[in-house]
Amino acid sequence: MSEEGGIWFVKNFVDVHDHPLAKPEHVFVLWSHRGLNEAQKAEAIALSSGGLRPYQIMDMMQKRNGGPGDAGFLMQDLYNFIAREKKEKVEGSDVEYVLSYMGRQKYKNPEFYFEYSTDEEGRLQNLFWLDSQS
Image 1 (cartoon, rainbow, N blue to C red):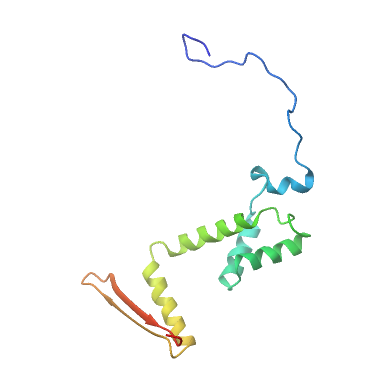
Image 2 (cartoon, rainbow, N blue to C red):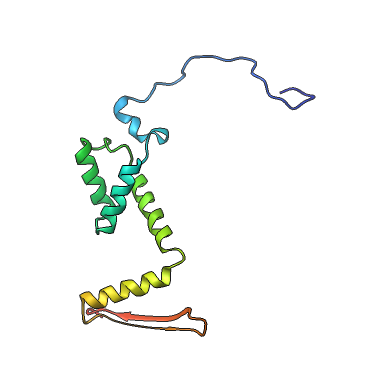
């Protein structure tokens, strides 16, 4: 570093790699080489909305692409993507989502019961539910 200007400069540069490169079959675990592409994201959202769990989606995508490591991303990448999508979907409408969910449960199971109350401004104040096991 230069004393007077605070500027950094290269004094010595060695143009050789100092460690072995990743094998082609292991490249998919490198952060810089993995991630869901747009088609995979759309498919993951559709399958997740259809009720499949992330591990089931991952299994399907890996089998379609040749096996473990051939999907181009890791299970954690898929899990994080789906979690972010769900969070964005629910943010700002969490109460509507919960009440809609409760209504669907009631429709599927007549023994399911829920009740809620709101304050003067229409905000959710209390929520009570029980299912057939309760």
